[in-house]
Amino acid sequence: MKELSLKYGCNPNQKPSRIYMAEGELPIEVLNGKPGYINFLDALNGWQLVRELKEATGMPAATSFKHVSPAGAAIGLPLSDTLKKIYFVDDVQIPLTPIACAYARARGADRMSSYGDFIALSDTCDAATATLIKREVSDGIIAPGYTEEALEILRAKRKGTYNVIKIDPQYSPDPIEHKQVFGITFEQGRNEIRLNDPALFQNVPTTRKTFTEEAKRDLMIALITLKYTQSNSVCYVKDGQAIGIGAGQQSRIHCTRLAGNKADIWWLRQHPKVMALPFVEKIRRADRDNTIDIYISEDYMDVLADGEWQKFFTERPEPLTREEKKEWIARNTGVALGSDAFFPFGDNIERAHKSGVEYVAQAGGSVRDDHVIETCDKYGITMAFTGIRLFHH
Image (cartoon, rainbow, N blue to C red; front, side):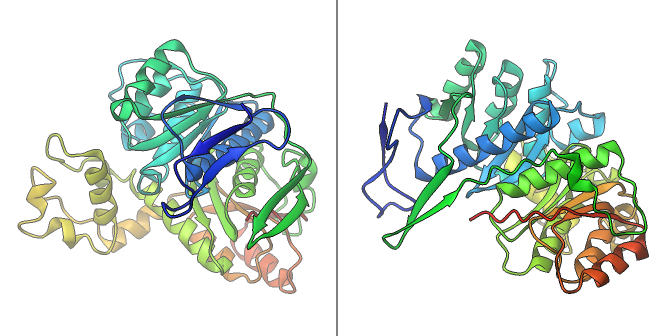
C-alpha cells in the first residue's frame, strides 16, 4: 500500500487528506478503526520515541501522546504497590508484564493530559497491556505486533472503532526529510543523534560530579523524550519514567514551571490523604482524576464545599493544606531533569530544586552559564553540559 486516504487533515475543513510514500510502500498496517491525520502524527512520533527508548535502555517502553507531544513516557520497570494504586491498576487480576508496566507508567504520570491519547509501544502488545488500555479513554495504539488475545480486546474497544496500527519495526526512513509550510518545501537531515552515549555526561562543570547509573538512565529517558516533544521543552524523570513534561512554551522558565508543577502533582497523588480519598462507587475514571487534581490544587473547595463533595465522596475529606503539600513535596528526591536547549538563567534550577531535582542534563552555551552552575552548586546538583540541542517542530 503506497497511500492511505484520510477523512480530513488537522481540522474538518482541511480536505483532501492522505498519507503516502513517494517511493516504496507504507510501513504501517491499520488492523482496526480509521486513524486520522493527527492520529498518525502522534503514532509515528510516539513510535520513534519508544523505539529509541528501547534501544537506549534495553527495556520495553511506552508513551502516551497528545497533539504531537508526549504526555508520558516510561520503561517497563515493575510497579510498587503505591504506583499500582495511583495508576489505578491495583485491581487487575492478571500479572502485569514489563510492557504493561511501561504503559501504566506512561499513562499514569499525567492522567489529565493523557485523556484521549494515542499510545505507542516498543514491543508486542499483550493481553495484560490491552486490558489496561481497554479501561482508558484513548484514540488508538501503534505497536510492532499484537497477540491474538490483545487484538481481540482492542478491537472491541469504542464499539469496534478503536484505532489499531501495526508498524514494521525494520522500517528505516530516508536520511533527508521534507515538509511544506505555505507552499514552500523545507528540507533537512533527520535528527539521528544518539542519546545513549556515556560521553553526554562527561562535561560536568558543577562542583558535584557524580551521576548514579539510575540518574544516567533517567537523564537519557528525559533527553530522548525531549527529542520528540514540541519545543521549547523540559522533562522531569524519576525511576524510569517521565513525571512532568513541559512542552511548546515560548519561555524556558515556563516550561520548567509547567513540568515541575506536573511532577509535583504526580508526587502529591502519593500522599496518604490523596490515596485514602473516599470516592463514591462507580465514579467515572475521568471524574475521579479531575477531582484528585482539584483536591490537590488551591481550588480544593470546588470539590469540598457543601453540596459539592457529596457528588464525589462518601464523606467529606479533610483538605490537604499548603503546609502539608510543601512538606510532602520536599520528600521527593533523586529526580533527573533534561532540557532541549540551554538554561538561560539560574531561575530554572531554582524551580527544579523545589521538585526534588538532583541531576541535570542540558546543552550549555548560555552567556549566563556561570549563574546556572552557581545555582546548581548552591543545592548540590550535578549538571552535565551535553552540547546537544534537541529542538523539535
